Length: 489
Image 1 (spheres, rainbow, N blue to C red):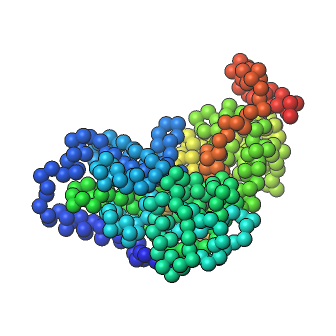
Image 2: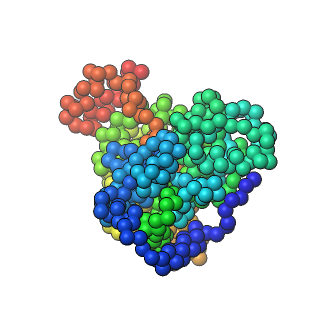
Image 3: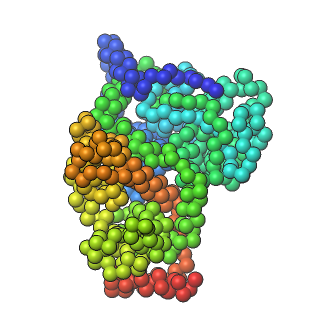
């Protein structure tokens, strides 16, 4: 086991960094600084690796914790953002040292080897480094148990870690790849092209939503700090702004919000549930995907599908002991309000559930950020709007932010305790269940987004697909198409 970092909290580390900033401000400024060049060009150039945790391209913008932070930092500097992505981390380091990249923002681990070559901004997240193998193979429990091929990404922190470990484990050997990032190496493990890889805990957690057979063998480091990297060129101007920016993000809660957005729902992992969900995507989803697409309206169809799976596992005849039924598990009063005549009709249930979810979204206070409204609406769908408002009020009374899901999810379980629910308007609620409910749907949604689902409607022939737009009523269209699919299959 290696421990390269102190046990200071991230907040304490940022405070120390701000202290360093004050010392830096006492030095004589350079006449033409790196920051001056950025503001003159009005462009901040950020280097990153393609990764679900750092940067990937969606339909409208770049997504990932690092890319979101980079976008906010560019706004902080009042300049445009340019992202340079690369599959080879060593090439990004070269571009930074050559002045072609201002900052590398790609979930980089702070290591002693790297500190001798570059400088790092304040840490904003912590991970463990873990050896991963494929489920079903013999589990190695320590380094000496590794009997097959071990591969890590070139120039990654994992190379530094393995180099340190080799000092006490001379038999340790590995390969490096400059063409595969850590996510792709995990796929190689699944495909049995390599036996093991070393990866960060957050990367493993996200990839297990798509590849549940990824298994943790053992952990080799803990509490490794992730931070942005800058060239160690003696120019403190940009470095000072990075420190000030992260201090602000820490104090206003923005960092906590991003952590919740990208990692708050992935820590819990259920192997059996994940395998069952992926099987359902293959076997059940093709029958109903078009219904979700036609009824999503302002939602993403994947959001609606994830909610439906959590409710019924895409079983149109599902029934609970409390009497809720159908694909969206609607109560009888809710179904009547939404115009649903038969809760067992998949078409009507999805329509009604979508309408009800949209209504819940519209009722939420406008102070809740757009990026978090769906999570609040899901909690309301599960536990009830009144109980959600009780939790928001308790959050505010306890000094937390009622518009922050990361804060409200801490409060919801308190609605199970008389000490707290006795002071609320709507009383007892299964708040812990609501938190797990929302986290599960978010994980299902992540899996749907990560998988290529364009092919899921492949059984629809060209003639049938061409008729989708020509049918007059979307509800009738989707029902008719699904009936014909049933006959074809």
